[in-house]
View 1: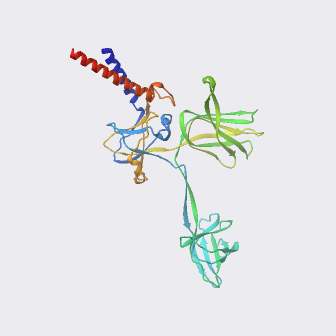
View 2: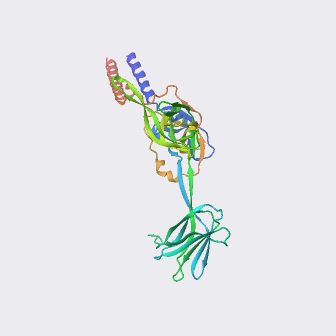
View 3: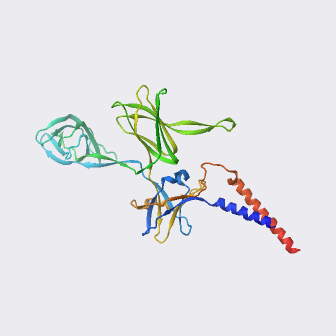
Length: 407
């Protein structure tokens, strides 16, 4: 009887141990004001995260889960803004003249004209000047075709010309015998590139050359699996100009007969290394423990390595924190299901500018979960079988106790 009870106790404890969902944690600093905060996800926990970060949790000091969303920096975003030129209109007998001022003397090769819709064709001439007195030809006798903005009342017309940096431009439109067209404004689109915040992923770099195969090999190794969003590579050659074919590969493993395994290099991308522009390889959040780049030298001398860096887009956990509570960032087992919070429906309502805080040092349980390991004793079939056995054993013991009490 005692042996059976002991068995039930030990078995239930093993099940409870299995049900512990967290393999690590990091403290979140106490805040002084209620509100939304973004917490940077430390790169050192990447090895323990499932794809999509589904096994992350935030819990308070009452062990209650706190809703959150995952946000990441946008690596590259292009924005355009229409910049207007200072515009002067002069009407004479032969033409309508528009004088535009280029105050920064930027080198330009086009002007955008915002024109009201009109079913007409006009002949125009474009001149340039540095002093508003002496004018020089840029583009002569070209046509402005019928303007039709579709559903709108105006259209943007593009006037292209050779690259120049005059202080003034004069657009002369012939309309001596007809009514002028209505030009609302003139300007250009200023394109801005916004680059997201990247974090450097530290790793060990090795560089070697193979004279027989006429190849060079670059390897970047990490201590654990890491998310890599971009790779920056800089090389220099013995000559000012060079252009080499290269490929990005990772080590993979395949099963052979008789339970044997074989490692091989799997090509992920092919690109060129050039002296005329920097080499940036977009890997879009792939996970690596080792990266290899193979450079084809052909009959040229090998290039010299300047820098080889792996970059990771900054990712955040965004959540509402209360100043009256304490919180922890928890790391669950990889099979922990993805949470489903109401907060995902209100991402547009969260302020764009929120304070960023950093989590404390990450503490991982001593018994690290082996990536992609399989154990019979942690399968669903085994757990259900164990539960059934415990229930049957408890039922048997209960019946036995009832019989003994009856005697």
